[in-house]
Image (cartoon, rainbow, N blue to C red; front, side, top):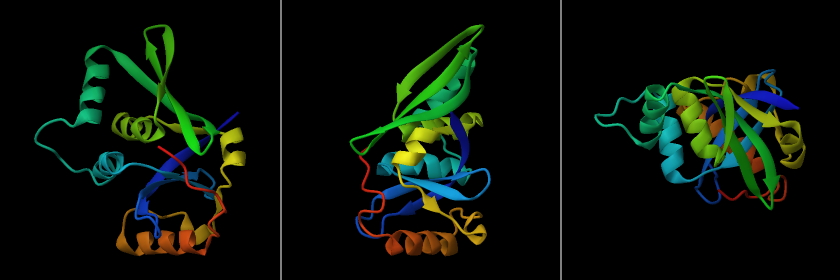
Length: 168
């Protein structure tokens, strides 16, 4: 079973300064932090901020290729968490044919944002990941400075073992 989640924004791990993409469930009750690379964080943040670029970046190129080939990104599924590494699929439709391709979650999320496709997380992943429980006031978190500071506080208040460091 999968739970639909939305990208709330990007923040930095207060300890390592590595970017973290924050996914929030549709009820706003819990968040799933996923540590990602800097390039992927830039790709996600630029789309969230609606930054226009003169030339297509990699995820823009992928979106354009899908469109030209009449392939639809149906959804992104974060499917597993093994040895602190998240796994995901991009689920495509090509006419009547359905196809699931392995992808790093950060790339899948960057592409999902560009194609306005939903992001789903396996309930099993949510159980394994020790998601962060949210107060209702935390659910509007985005990229603003105030909200980044709020997420930094949430992450700082967690013990180092609360949910581990996840590999890309």
